[in-house]
Amino acid sequence: MRGGGGNFGIVTSFEYRLHPVGPVLGGTVLYEMKKAWEVPRFLDKFAHECPDELSVDIGFLTTPDGNPMVGITVCYSGSLAEGEKALKPLRTFGAPVADFIQPMSYIKMQSLLDEDFPPGRLHYWKSNFLRAVSDDAIEVMVEYATTMPSPTSAVELQLMHGAASRVGCSETAFAHRYEQYDFLVLSNWTDPADSEKNVRWTRAFWEAMQPFVEQRVYVNNLGEEGDERDRAAYGSNYERLVVLKNKYDPTNFFRLNQNIKPNTQAASVTGRGDR
Image (cartoon, rainbow, N blue to C red; front, top):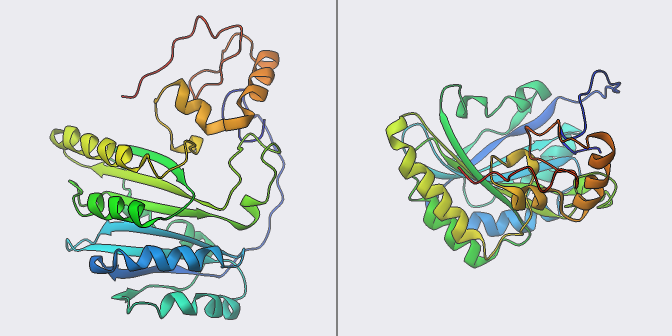
């Protein structure tokens, strides 16, 4: 059931073990958009060779002064001295225009991007996993990243590697245990009058990436996108989760989620369309 979302009941209590973390070495390195081809190629090689202590993602974004940029955000959760060594290739690559990497508390690292997603904005996201950063995939990402209708939107590739990729596919509800990127189109804007063009751009971008991505998705990135996408979130574990659903929630009482339908309800509960 671990990772099965709200499909099986309500958690009323749990126990957890605390581990000391921090200070961490974290922050973002920014490059001009003209480096948009070089940076993903470099990062793909760098990231797959990095130690477990290092988390990495790459983003296409627009700075507050309106300049399109490519950014690499990192968090090294280990010795600061070892972190400096691990990050040296990144910090010396391609003459970045800004380097905001520094020691900070773990709490500050966790809230580093909060200002980019303030309350009150409108959002429309699309997502899949990406196993290979090919030249053709980069071409599509650069094309759409440079035509974003909203300056507050972003495109992100978040690397999943290390311990997360070494768990067995059937050990938790989340089955997609590979060295891969979580590809995210994070559209957000402020004026409801701009909704149609932002949604249209997001869908077109996502469709253009379909030849390169895996037909798998992280459940937390899903909206109301229908049964097929819900199944894609659980992959090879979906049918096993249906068996559990039949046992613990045969009437599908817990259904306001990316729903795993019990067999007994499959014929009577309608799917949700993409909205």
